[in-house]
Length: 304
Image (cartoon, rainbow, N blue to C red):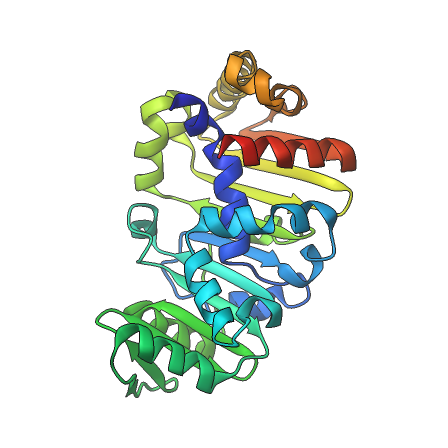
């Protein structure tokens, strides 16, 4: 459905937030695990977000959207409440992860029961985890193509090749990340950056022709007073940025008029989205107070 497709960036951002966050308290420590070639980064302060009404209300839906609900529920039934111990998390990977979610990496900061986590994955894969050695530290193979590693207060899980690269990145402690990360990492509860993704440009170009020229884009999320979303996109020149801002305004007006959205009340939230261009940059902001954020949360539940 086109309406849901147009709203996908909001749902996707929230889903990533629950499936893969990282803390404002130790953002640099978490980013240090990300290997060279990382083009997509989503970081979240889970510990801070848990205390906010909006996140509490949306957490189950967010986890379900992220596609990790079943795994987390299964772990919890076995006495392993992973999310309760996670303080920060990062979800990241190379360009391929836009098309293949499995080509990604999750970095978690918290207090982990390694024995129980290993036991869970052994039961799931129906095989003992195989310990692998690398110059930067040991890790465990999970099934045919996944891996997991533990160091101090961090756990790293995902594509086996990326887990090994993450260990090497942490040891080198010289992350080479998209330029926009430096600007966006001041986000209150979460931030995300996608840079130089040809896969994303192709996807966006199908329905949003002007967006296919985006060089990099970032997003921050703030749940402290309700819901505040800020998106920044960098384009080749000021003329292109101006055209994109105008196109976004036009599309928002069209989407807000959709009868389905009016029926569930999402048109009010979309009407509050502000899009402007400043030089080669496009800025899109949505700021909802507590009551409006709760209404928005209910509308998203009804839609998805």
